[in-house]
Image (cartoon, rainbow, N blue to C red; front, side, top):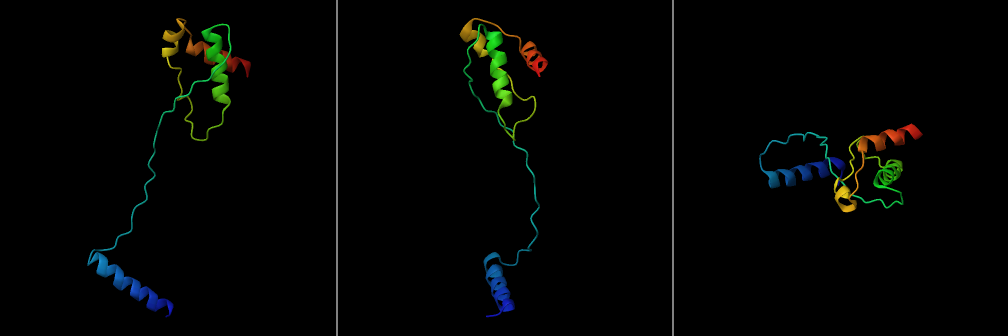
Length: 99
């Protein structure tokens, strides 16, 4: 069986399965998908502000090729758990001062 005979037989099977529907080329789409992840990073510190800064340093050092810049945040629930507060902007500022 030569190459053309194989193609012809494939077309007969294809048309008998799909009938007379017109064959059109499918479009290609690049669909962006965004997701969140949740992780707790355990650190030792004198207070919540220092702990937040240490955890952020660890988080930002972990490579993740799918990470979207500046798309992270600290869950404010930690303030309820510890009865302490932290300043997220100050934590970011202090981390970048050290670099």
